[in-house]
Length: 141
Image 1 (tube, rainbow, N blue to C red):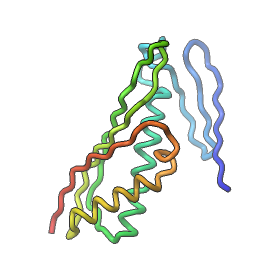
Image 2: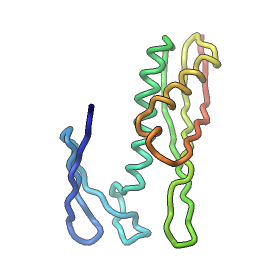
Image 3: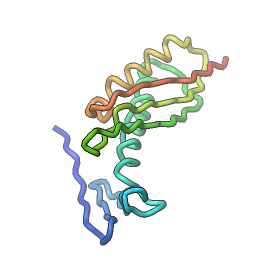
Image 4: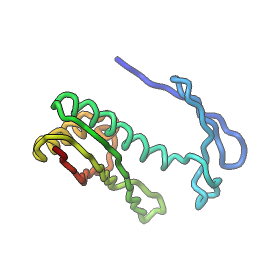
């Protein structure tokens, strides 16, 4: 069974440093609105990126499986944060807005491939946020 790990260390104030097992390293902070620093990765950024990048990789997998010729792909992810009465918050909804350009494929097939990508995305299947996909599909011949 696969497993993944990383390590974080405190670097003073509201900053930390992360080491991933694949060799990636980066500094991170709380958001500036929570006493963090500007222009640094935040846990909120990482959460959104984890969902967006995992679905992205599964789109590539699904399009290969469905034999769809993908010409371009980009996706904007937006997370809605709900504030609770006790002043805590959570991402209640994440909306992915992929823009895809494909060749000689029916839109229905592209939508089925996107559904498969969402279904088999380890990260998006592991979070409690509602995940919505609102694609813009361009078909060229």
